[in-house]
Image 1 (spheres, rainbow, N blue to C red):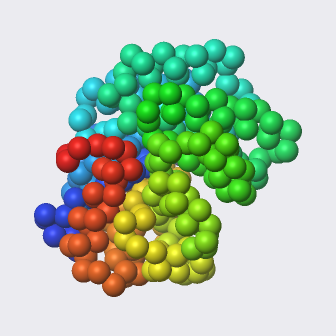
Image 2: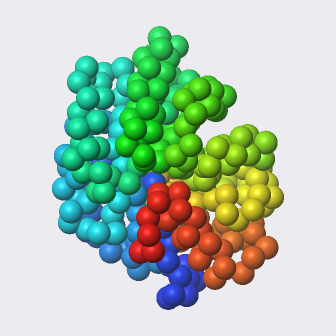
Length: 269
Ligand SMILES: [Zn+2]
């Protein structure tokens, strides 16, 4: 069933992180997009997870102007990336510079086996450097790795900003990234009462700090565990977000939309 939410027709939502190309969603891509639009989603970002996804994403971007794409290698795929991957990404960023909004999904995942850390760090550093050279923001994956991400961003003096995807953490952790020009990607985590620290951070920081995301097909919302997450669920993330904020819904929506454009350096869409 499509998700229904009490969203005025004028409100536009931006799903800044949605893996619409992965098999779980690709199987009914047009339907999921239609349902998302009915739920108020007017644009989304599809971040790549591995090199084999890049050409497909470039093709998808051609099909649908509201689908923005990021190319990169996710840390989960770092261990098996091909030796020419960074060079190929460099070429694609040159050839399709306007079609690609960001370098992503890149980052560090220190919940993985320690044997992968050195490779992850090397690949993250190389991709961050490409983002800098091609003047693109980045979409960052983190797990147990916020200090190491910050250290590399500072080491490279990276000032292109972007989105810290799937943010969870304290105000202090959030501020370190905001100070470097990042927005915090807020997803289904806030629908779980137990996510107290993250919910508090959403309440306390300026509205300009945030963008919304589903991370579909992963990260099901509270009450939807075990189901495939879809971009239409962004309406429910938005509902929860609004409950945590003092501003009127309309203002929250307009500001989040603008934050998304700013983070991805898109002009009004
Ligand atoms: Zn992701």
